[in-house]
Length: 403
Image (cartoon, rainbow, N blue to C red; front, side):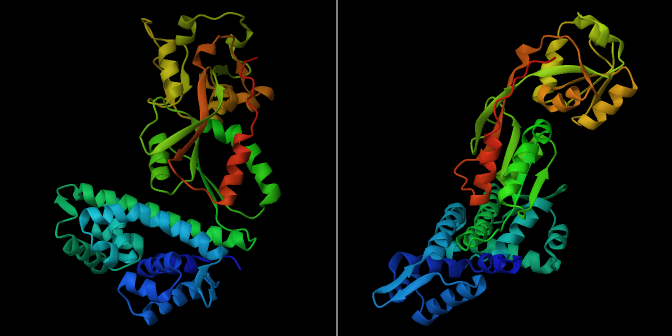
C-alpha cells in the first residue's frame, strides 16, 4: 500500500492529534499523556486511533508496561518533532496559546494569502470560498491579538511575524509530507518524489547520468526537474517545495539558511556554428569577438559576469546581445547566423563532441567556477532523496579543457 494524498492530509490536518501522539511516545502512557495534554484518556486514545486509521498502520507496541513506539512510530515521531521544531517558535512569537489552538486549515489560509497577497486569489488557490479563508486568517489574528496583514494600495502585505509563521508552516507541512514517504520505506514500498531545481549545466551534464543510475533501483519514483531563474529556484528551495539545487555555487552563499556543497569545477567556452568564419582561425582578439552578435545568459548570472569582464575596458563592447540560458536556442541561432555564444563548457560538451557547435581558440581558464549542490541547512532527506543525491555526487570530476 502506497500512502495516498488523502492519507498525507490525514496527518497534516490533525496537528493537535500529532502533539498527543508525541506525548504518548515520550511518556509511554495514555494516562500520563492525557495529563500532559490536559485531555481525558478517551480523547488521547481516540487521537491515536484516528492517526493510525489514517495511515493504515500501527504506531505502537502495546504491553502491560505501556505503549512503546514501533518502527513506524519512531519514523513518524522524528518527522513530527522536526515539523513542530519549525512551527512552534513562530507560533510562540505571536501567542503561546496558538501552539495548541492553531489548525492546519488556518495555517494553510495564512500561507495562501501570504503568497497571493489577496484573499480572493488565495481562496481560489485553496479551492475554498473567500469568506472561509478570511475567517481562518481572522481567527489567527484574534488569537494573536494583532493584525497579520496590512492593507495597502498594492494588495495585502504580511507583517514580519506573519511572514515568519507562513515560512515555518510551509516547512512543517513539508516535513509531514516526508513522513508519509518514510513510513512507506519501512514497508519496502516506493513512494514520494524527487524535486530538483536545475540550473542549465546540470540539465546537460549531471542530471542525465544521475537519473539513469537512480532508475535502475527506483523505476517508479516521480522526478520533477524545475527550471527558472536562480532567485525563483532558491525561493522554492527555502519554502520546502524543492529538494535541492544543482548548478553554479554562489560566493558568498546567498542566505544563511542554505548550505552549498562543492562537486567539481567548470570553465566557460566561446562557441560558434560549424560554418562560422572564426572557426578557421588559430588566434583571436577580444576586439574581433566584440564585433559579432552574441547569445549569453542574463545579467546577474555567473556566466554573464565573466562575459562582461571579458570585454571590460573596450571602447566598443558587444552591442547586439540575446539573453538566454537555452542551449537549444543557442545551437540553432549559431548554426543559422554569425552569432557567438558564451556558455558552460560542460553544458556544451555534447554539442561540441557531435560537431553541432565549434569551440573558438580562446583561453578562458580564468573563468573556472565551482559547481555543486545547494540545500536547506539541517534538511533531512528521505531514503530516495539521499540515494539520488549519491548518484549526483558520484559524477567524476570531468576535464574542462576545451578542444
